[in-house]
Image 1 (tube, rainbow, N blue to C red):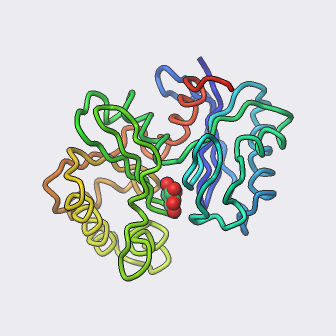
Image 2 (cartoon, protein in one colour):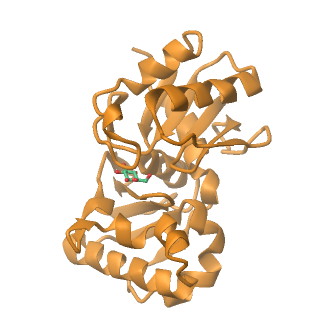
Image 3 (cartoon, rainbow, N blue to C red):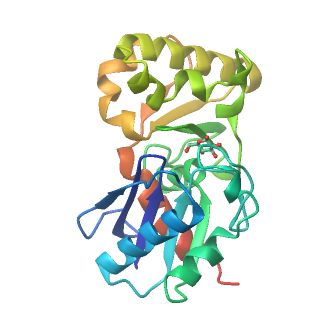
Length: 248
Ligand code: BGC
């Protein structure tokens, strides 16, 4: 089955049509920079631009970079307070001529792609999908089962969320070398291990393209693998989610 998958991030909103069985993108990816400020109106309008680009009329799966329960945004994260309490699936549906939207947290959906048909296939025990971009997202799986909305990027470090120290946006803003950034990320991984003894980490998000250049700086003794679908895991997982989630 082919479904349009969207990945809404702090710096880009991307979409592609996805074969939900193989995870293959059947079109080119289409990306629009995330409008600033990231308001409900500006983001919904950008989502519509992507729908129109593909002339899409079927169901749509979409990641969202906040806590999401039943399609509703429950945290401001890097978007803004205006979003808290917004029924995101309904907002997008109203903006896009009543299309059927399925929306969930970005790390959770990237993890669904990786656990089902990617780097996490057949992995048992506790697996963390970590998406590193504007924020630091964590999707938690136990024996392949998603435990939604685990927000380890908001562990406190220096009195603020640790994503303000170790996300990729911080590397760019502070012009850190990959090695200096990797030391910060390594610190984060050690912290997660101390808290919950995971069996495996899978790394996605924009920085996954550079995985081979920073992996040797990581000192944790838990296996760390690059996402099979790299930065497309969100788009693919979103499409897979829209396929499996029953319409209500
Ligand atoms: C949000 C998470 C999200 C992550 C990556 C964080 O700021 O709180 O929900 O998964 O950014 O986008």
